[in-house]
Image (cartoon, rainbow, N blue to C red):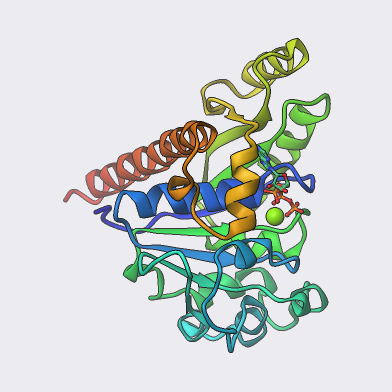
Length: 270
Ligand SMILES: Nc1ncnc2c1ncn2[C@@H]1O[C@H](COP(=O)(O)OP(=O)(O)OP(=O)(O)O)[C@@H](O)[C@H]1O
Ligand SMILES: [Mg+2]
């Protein structure tokens, strides 16, 4: 059990690169290890919510949470997922779009405040961001301890990841000092394509060790998402390969949080 649940924001500048896939993959990997996970869906498209197969229509959503903004109010919006008792979700709804710029004091700290005291009940909290670096993603970055930047091995990958990392730096400068980019994840990589290999090298040149092993392109990922089940429960060789990639990525998230906590305790002289 990790001492304090890492809150991981999964973000990218571009749409469709695999934020939701990485969120779901990490949730599946953590569940497979018997850990308790909370997925916060901050995307009005609600793809993560759909893939988590909620057994009942939720009463409250992340939109309500941001609108309300009271300390700890996120607890009231937690639904159980259809994956199993290990995975809970704060679902998204289309209305999020219209509430994309929450009004009131400190609009980017509403999620952080709403999650106060709520994350303690989990080993891992994952925030699936919408495809922009706007107010919703900024709320995720103020609530998060770690950022995972998803990208694809394409011509614009380095630039897109740089902009996502810049957004992380802004959140750090504006007060969330704990936030670190733990991984730049190239998704949908095809090992046979020399273009992809070239782009991966380019990413490694720009971001060094933060760049993880790429998540391969696998039809099983889409099949499991369509069926609303975790990738670790999908039976095919492609699913097993994808699941291993997410296990490795989870290892990186856990490793960094363990190291950070040890450093924090050392600083406090404990
Ligand atoms: N490694 C992969 N192999 C096969 N299909 C994938 C892979 N990664 C993502 N996909 C598919 O690509 C589509 C887009 O992925 P996903 O929804 O995860 O991206 P996203 O960044 O969350 O998109 P959005 O910006 O719209 O929220 C989905 O249909 C997903 O199933
Ligand atoms: Mg998504």
